Amino acid sequence: MRSFSSLRTLIIPFILIVMVLSVAFGAVYLHGSVANAASPTIKAHAIKVSPKVATAGTPDHTGTFPCQNPTYTIHCYGPKQIRAAYSIQPLLNKGINGWGRTIVIVDAFQSPTIRQDLNTFNKTFGIPPSTLNIIAPDGLTPFDPTNADQVGWAVEISLDVQWSHAIAPNATIDLVLAKSDQDVDILSATRYAVDQNLGDVISQSFGENESCVDPQLLVQEHKVFQEATDKHITLLASSGDSGAAQLTCDGTSYVKAVSSPASDPLVTGVGGTQLFANQKTGQYISEIAWNEPQFNAASGGGYSVLYSRPSYQNGTVNNKGRGVPDVAYNAAVNGGVLVAISVLPPGAEGFPFHIVGGTSAGSPQWAGIVALANQIAGERLGFLNQAIYGIGRSSSYSSSFHDILFGNNTVQLPNASGTIVTIIGFSARKGWDPVTGWGSPIVSNLVWGLLNAR
Image (cartoon, rainbow, N blue to C red; front, side):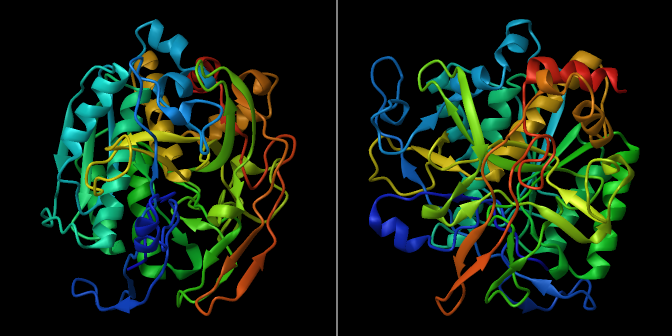
């Protein structure tokens, strides 16, 4: 099984930094092979992830966190700011809130405090409650708070659930939990969601070096994705957080590669930006490609060596391989989102709120956007990429997307022996690029383009 890394965040105080140095920021890390009893011919890889979390500070009487002030060391955004920056609030004001639609989130293990944390998030930001269904088709693994991998996935669960809910507050959320963080178990959970036709859109905040995926497993996964597409289920996946790099298959170094499942042509890959918006109102100022060397993190992106360029990328992607990502969203740690996470130990000011960054924040929020569009349509939009690339090549592009023109995803990362490995990536540029795709959404305009492309 492959190694799925759920997200990368910043952890303070120092003792937590030591505990979580192997964070993956939504990318997948490969850490070795184990036998798979169910499919002995498939090479298996286990997940090793632990997120880093930064304190958000204690909110004042108005509900404003210190990290929402310009003088704070690390900035953050709450739902109000993100909704304003990406023009989501105009739809919410009209009652377009995801009502009648269902978002499916696939994650591993569990978070024993997810309902409590969602309630805290809702009360803090004045968001109405919604239906959260927790589904464990292969059984729910007991939570071990001393297991760094399980804690990492618990943080991912909190991020995914709370922020998909923040974007589409009246959508139902089906949280489908794999029994472990091994890829056959992840695929089993995804297959269940598709077979049972649980929802309109599936968010996948994980990935790995596509060349490290067992070929048989890749075939099985693509078949599941085809079945989902046939049922008009939208598929989303984070593009990863190690820039143009992915771990080698033995987990000891880095190579230039893209992340699966984002590289599958049936999936809409979500890259990362760093958003600059008014700390109080959320008014959009600008964005650049996400690249924070201080956190060894950047937007995943590049060209597949397994999938040829799909027809919807013809005339846009100047490479024979499928280009990744397709779209982008705020992913920066400095400028991350506020998340209630009480599985982490107390001790940070403002507990249980923390600042979280990574492309794993983008996939669930895009899932919320899809839920809004589906509500307007009264049906599932399904596969998005044909429509997205059509909009990108049309006169409505500038009113539908923030085109990201600056930044790159070149990274310098330490290998297993501590030697710095430099992976030269790609630069953001006008139109589509293999760092931020077509850019970040101007949602109140984009949804109409998606609808018109049906």
